[in-house]
Image 1 (cartoon, rainbow, N blue to C red):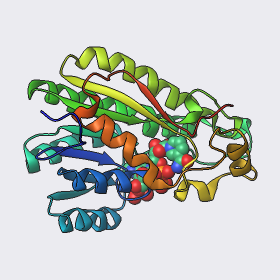
Image 2: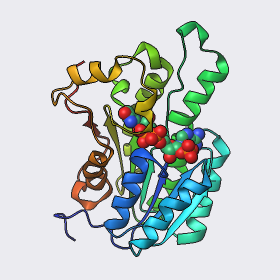
Image 3: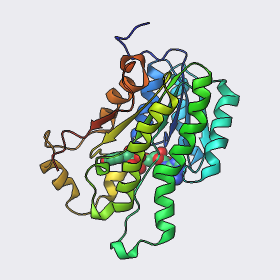
Length: 251
Ligand SMILES: NC(=O)c1ccc[n+]([C@@H]2O[C@H](COP(=O)([O-])OP(=O)(O)OC[C@H]3O[C@@H](n4cnc5c(N)ncnc54)[C@H](OP(=O)(O)O)[C@@H]3O)[C@@H](O)[C@H]2O)c1
């Protein structure tokens, strides 16, 4: 077994939110490393576009329209992936977002449920459903995409920050529960220039640059190194970890 290269030959990966931004980058990088990829998001058309690019790389792809804020969609997505490929080796819980609000007082129960559903509850459900099958099949790697906000909460995204912190804690617990063959880790991105960046409140980019050791935001492709590391045997002795891809955020 090679531990020098991020080799995913013959593996099957699910990437939620795989149609755009960081998920798109990870889906294509996994295909380049030899994996077949299941790309899931709400809009089938954009998933199909990425699936086409995966197929151009000589790998198989399945595009799935799924709302990852809905509990039952996790089981449907897992079933579709196993029906198509018979196994899953890598799961990336990447779909996530923090809708804008004007003030903390504007946050109602519906908002709170939606943010917790997408950023924490459904990643938990999908991790358990896929993780238990991975364990029965001999192992796998689960990557939960959290956020710098999980350790540095912001008032403009407080429910999201809390949901991402819960994702970090869940990861530690699942690493133990699904071990010793399934590894479960977090990537915690800082500011990446994806579509999310177009919704940043005034001054966020400047603040991120000032409070980051590398003094800049990241390009979407810069998620690929951490993702390939955690997905592949290069990280065979890494589980329950939070890998900060935040440019050295100093708060
Ligand atoms: N970019 C950053 O600066 C940053 C920083 C910290 C953490 N993160 C985290 O990194 C992850 C990816 O972010 P990104 O910047 O790549 O975001 P993005 O460019 O906005 O892409 C989000 C992806 O998730 C999908 N998605 C959104 N809501 C969904 C839902 N309810 N059900 C299913 N799919 C859904 C989107 O597709 P559809 O619209 O078709 O559903 C899209 O594929 C998120 O978890 C985010 O919280 C990002």
